[in-house]
Image (cartoon, rainbow, N blue to C red; front, side):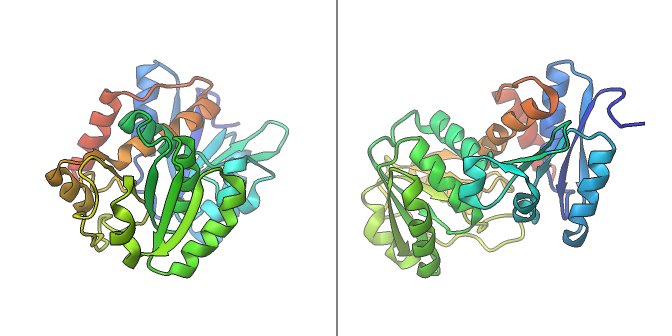
Length: 286
C-alpha cells in the first residue's frame, strides 16, 4: 500500500527539519485550492539521506523539497538535472517519476528572480548589483540577477579567491559582467549599485549579524536579504532606517516553492500577500 491512496503526498527533507516553513507554505496552498494532499517534514541525517529517499520513493511519495545540508547530495543522486541545478551544483527539488527516474531542479534562482522582479519592478535592468557571498546561494543569486537584467554583478566575499572562482565558473553561462572582489571592496563599488543582495547566512537566527555600513550605498538602491528568519534582519533594519526599499527572504522562499507545488500536486499556485502574512505570523511565534 502506498501513501498516496487518500491524496498526493510530498515531503521536505533536511537535518534538522523542525525550522522548515515548507509544510506551512504548501499547506496554505492546499487549503486555498481545496486539494487533498500533504507535504510532510522528513528529518534525515546526512549519512541516511540516500536510504531515506529510497524509502520515500517506495512509499509512493511524489518528490521532496530539499533543504540544508542535503542540496549537494541531492544533485549527486539526480539522474536528470535542469540548467540551474547544473550551474549551482545543488538541487532543492527532487521529483520521483513513475518510470523510476529522479529529476533534480534548482528553483532557488527562480525564486529570487521572481521576488526581485516583484520588489524592484525591472529597475535593475542595465545597472549594477552587489552580491555578498560566494557559496551555493550566491550561485543561484547570480542567475537571478541576470534574470532581472543586471548588467554588472560585483561578487564580494570574505575570501576573495572564492569570489573569483565563482565568477570564473559562471561567467560563460551569463550575459551579466561578473566582477569578483573582497568584502573590503564594498565602499568602492557600493556607490554605483542599484541593488544589494545578501546571499550569506549572516544575520540568520543564531548567527552573527552581517556587519556592513550602508552609508556608501545610494538611498535609491534596493536591499534584499535572502535570510527569512528573522524576517527583519539587522541588514534590512539598517536599510529600512535609511529609506531603502527592502525585499525580505520570504519572497524568495514563496516563489521557489511554486514549481515544487506544481510538480507535486499538479496545480500552479499563486504567491499572495495572504501567504506572506501567514508565514510571517509563524515566524513571529519564534
